[in-house]
Amino acid sequence: MSLMNNPNLMTLYHVLLETVGTQQLIVSYEIATPDFDYVDIAKAHLQETLADPNIYIYSGGSSSIGHHPIGDGSPVVVEWEYVVGPTQ
Image (tube, rainbow, N blue to C red; front, top):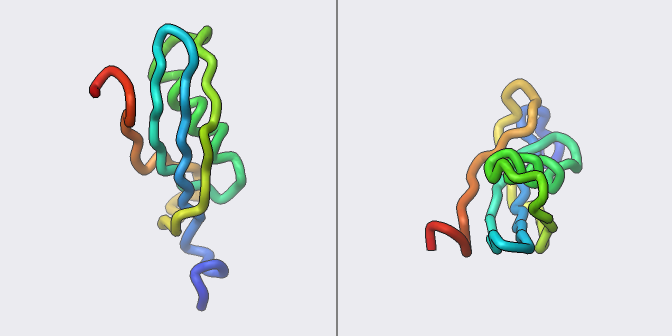
């Protein structure tokens, strides 16, 4: 069985988000989801983490990078890190 047709796996995506304004950040995400909502999931996670609804977040790019166990089928933020921002 190919990875593409394996019902026990969902696609893993890399998403790069950037913010504009007083908090200029670049944040790298790995998101696993059975749908094509990976950018929306990453944006919602970052918006919640920053706790500031006035920060504009945009996608600097995204791509499929592999597969992740499907579990209960819910989207999963596998990993995220600041590439440029408060920890740099």
